[in-house]
Image (cartoon, rainbow, N blue to C red):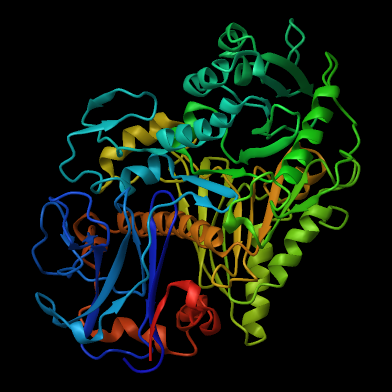
Amino acid sequence: MPGNSYAYAYANNHLCYIRWHTGAKIRECLGFSVHRVSVTKLSPFQQAEEALPSWVGFAGLPKPKDGSTTDVWPIQKFEWLDRTPPREGAFKYRVIPMIGVPGELHADESRALETNEVALVSDFGNISATFLLGIASASISRGRRPGAGAKSRTAPGGDNPEPGVEIVGPLGPRAEALAAIRSFLSQMDGGGRVCGAFHNLTDRELTMALAALDDRVELVLTESGARRSRHGGAAGGASEVGNHARTLRIGRILITRRHLARGASHNHFLVYVDAEGRPQSVLTGSLKWSAMCLRSQTNHLLQVRASDVAGQYLAYWRGLQREASVKPVAGREAYDVPPVSGTGENAESPPPAAVGGAIRAWLSPCGPPQNTPYHCVHGCPDLMEVHRHIDEARESILFIAHRPGSPSIAQHIRDVHRSRVRAGRPLYISGTSTDPLADGQFVEVFKRGISHMVQGPARARATGAGVIDDAFSRLQEQLHRAGETVIHETIVVIDHGSEERCVVIAGSHNLNCKSSCLNEENLVIITGRSRLARACAAHASSVTEHFLWRWHLQQDMKLPFLKRGRVWSSLGMTDGWQDKYFEASNEASHDSGLLCIEDINKQDSGIVITQ
């Protein structure tokens, strides 16, 4: 192929992201077929190579009942998500141009590109990351398209299959979260104890996992709200932590209760302290330990095995425990726990891959006094550091933002994007943010300078994902019963294609001033961990593409009845679909710069480049 042509892939714990570039437009190319090639053969029945599924075809051609593959319905863009990769073993991908006319395509093997080898993974040195898609995305990412001949599904409110409800997969979000949490608790086999802080602890299995450790667990449970119950707790928040208090008492867990009259506690973390009293690791992230979060929302879990970072969380936890009182906690000062940058090198036995990069934790409240207006990041040291990283981005910013508030981190990213476009230094931006509306929840998808709004119907409980009455009709009832089916995480990935400049920002923090000044939150900023950054980028891309597709479906539903369904047969009939990717005036032409050439050429990148 002319110019620099490349293909690369990277994965996290549940999917794989593939991106490629051809260097120049290919004549008569109506798209690409993506084949998954198994490197590790685990079964005699396993196919050595198979084309990935595709559900969008050409207009006027017959549509198979169960969809088709990219050999027949090719991909008309330069990126793709493999949502059903094998859970074990290594694999790679071949990207093949499909030449000809609709219905009579042939593969141009001479121009095929091959990616690096990948495997589903959650461990990245001394950091483990588990990403959870929830029922809205998992029903699509596990198995077949909803409504395509499914036999049974798992309802979001229970574990038992119901008629007409498709099982989302062998390891759905709930099982993946349980596996990550049990992996963290397995450190207790060598002795020691676990200290945790929660504001929502209602999932029975997670509660039982803690109760099984008996008196080796100490918890601080925080309730929020001004209304008081006759027992001295917060009437509004008691249900969030009280449903399984009996289970915890049976397990002889030491529980300290707190109440906040102002602000909110969004902490959900555990700190492991070894038998000699030394903090060793911390489990944090955006996941609330409730059934709804496990089944119907997007979240992430991070396990950081670094004693200095764990020590910072432990000091923060002790401060929360000291504040416990029957009286509401109000007007308190910011926690005097300075942020720590850790590499994990001072851990007892750091893995070889832990060398390099930095982990920096911020624990809220750490901003100005509570009476300061929440409209300026100045005075909030954690937000100032986040904004600095965003301002210094060179190639890309991918983000997921849950209720970013004001000032909005999503708006700041868009402002940086506009300023770069004006300066002639375009920046690839792709992200999703959610905010409440009077009639429910909406999701805003931002890609290549264009904003799309995905909104649920008035009075519908299924919000964010939006209720679609077309191919997703079988999912409608689940979404309505799932409650607030929305994004429930904030994560920012900067320059994920660079080995040195990549940044990951994650945790419970919503990256706004209220979270820094008033709420109890935790935030980690991780730099120089390219494998982790690319896994986070795959997750962010998955969520963005999911809601972008739902936006297309909602636009289709606005058409007259007889014209609906065209979104499923919207492939271009000529090679003109490539034009926007090779016109300098179009933002799509900058997608190829997601990985800069100097990083692609590094031997350890595992990315194949063709001259």
